[in-house]
Image 1 (cartoon, helix red, strand yellow):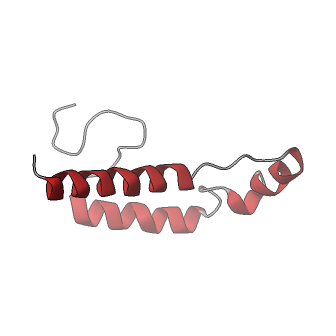
Image 2: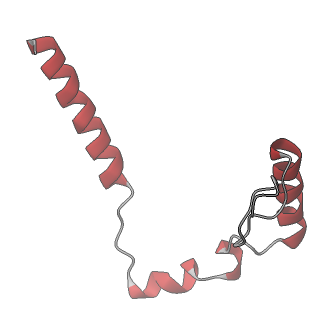
Length: 76
């Protein structure tokens, strides 16, 4: 490999490592109450979830997929 290729690979590895480590955070005991609040839940809005299901159905031409087998093609 040339020096330029090695430099690009090292830069890419450093960038990926930076992104991977940037998401790591230690949660303190007094912060857990805030993070476990109802507003932090992903399923707190049934109407919004219905909208997302409709969008997914319209784009993928399939329904279901929430913990069950099959993807709308009939090949369960």
